[in-house]
Image (cartoon, rainbow, N blue to C red; front, side):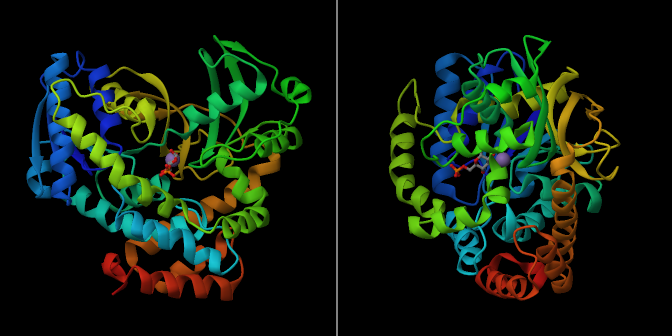
Length: 423
Ligand code: G6P
Ligand code: MN
């Protein structure tokens, strides 16, 4: 069995290696074809992987590629985890909307839209070059739009991943005073726009409205990943659990003010720490038994992706939250929408579980985000400026035609080297 890893020089790679180690027995004999356009980072990560596998006696072979086709040839699974244009491009995604009074975020809103324009052409190329029947297991953001573009415009098989639900479930465990072990939430909706009305502890259904009545809104500010105070405030009004990204919708103007006051983008913050991070990983990679702690993404990010590959490959039929075609699982969204939903994942792909309608208070919002995503996906595939403008005008952050035009013109100009479809 061969697995190609596209973006293997990524800072998330140490976590992927750790994820592979945790399923080493189930994947014994697998060839990992590591590909990246950055040969230096690729070299660091492949050395790290080889030494970590050797130290733990894991039966993987690792090959290293800067030519895409060679990495993809013969691969049954193509794991995609790259950021086109890198963090410099993310900085533009985060800062351009903000100039026009709109939240600048890498996946949500116009920032995510600009990222989709860059990601989709690369994914379409991978879909075309991959072996027939291969599964694309995708982490590249915005994962939902990317998954939609590949699913509707190519013959390739794709499953879209995001590990946000793991962190969000943990955050809710803390807020509600529940153990996170054994806690399971049915997150449903669209990637980074999911909601949970049902919560189980060790399989036993919990009374969510009652838990939320008793919930006290904690003080304290937000971190890059968590904003518990706002989440609690929202949940008490909505009557169910919101995903972390919901703050950008329900506290839009406050977040704009905070982002402006902060002065640097998240991309700039990461760029500042990245050289030190790679240096530390490089130093570890030369050891006989490397331990790259402080890894980007944490253990679960990599473990989740590897668990999905195992579920597909071993026909496990395991219940997992993934991005896939709706097929009626969520009654309030189109049958062919790409949704994020609990699904049983086995050899023939994810089978989404019937979840009923979206909760009333966020139904219209989620449908609007879906309308935007569909247009964004079409614009990213076709390079049609009018469709791109329609996408931004459909997005709940934007609406205003002139604001949409300004962000689009500035975004297309800033990213032109990565947007062949718009030339
Ligand atoms: C979460 C989201 C990802 C996103 C990441 C950004 O994990 O689910 O989709 O890319 O956060 O984290 P960062 O550290 O790059 O800001
Ligand atoms: Mn995500």
